[in-house]
Amino acid sequence: MIDWTEVETVLLDMDGTLLDLHFDDFFWQQQLPLKWGEMNGIDIEEARSRLLPIFRKTEASLSWYCLDYWSEQLQMDVFKLSFDISHLISLRPYVIEFLSHLDKLDKNIVLVTNSHEKFIELKMQKTGIENHFHHMFNSHDFGHPKENTRFWEVLAENIHFANKSTVLFDDNLSVLRSARQYGIEHLLGIARPSSQAPLKDTAEFKAVSSFRELL
Image 1 (cartoon, helix red, strand yellow):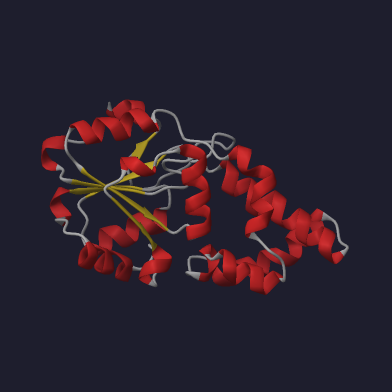
Image 2 (tube, one colour):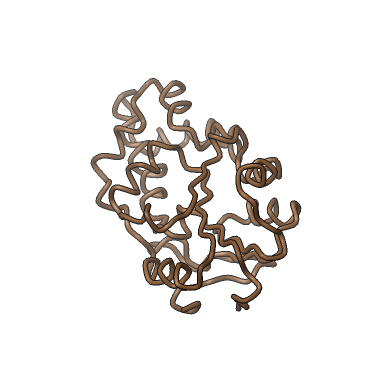
């Protein structure tokens, strides 16, 4: 799938790529509607129906990924809601082995995520993978989500990478298309971002089912 002799830099998404997306799906689809509904005296189904149009207005924007934004909009401490379900945070299969393999190949290993810094810190504490990266960047620091080509421009201002010798792993098709538009040569989707959901159609992109395939 990849000729590693042609690759110098490996860009890795976090949620749904290295980490099981089940935590995030449960958080946004179950935990948040439940607690917001309780606060407003409505059941979870009614809460979901009210929240859905609010969410859709910000989809793929920086605000969509910002916990502080949602805390302000919903008048509650959104990040605090994650504490009760933090046990759901887990790595996808063979992630540690894959990261160690990249290190042995002397690749530049870079985390690129839309996740808010509070979630990044929590997930690093739970998984212990922080030391596997040479660099870690999130879209909130750059002022642009990965769905915007400006993200990749700012990334290139922070670290040197050549498009032809860079590979990006990401479960978000909009992000992969943005990176392709910018010019990144090697792009791979994730076939099963969540262990609790069916296989995902990765459209025009080749997909990795398990990092074991790349060892």
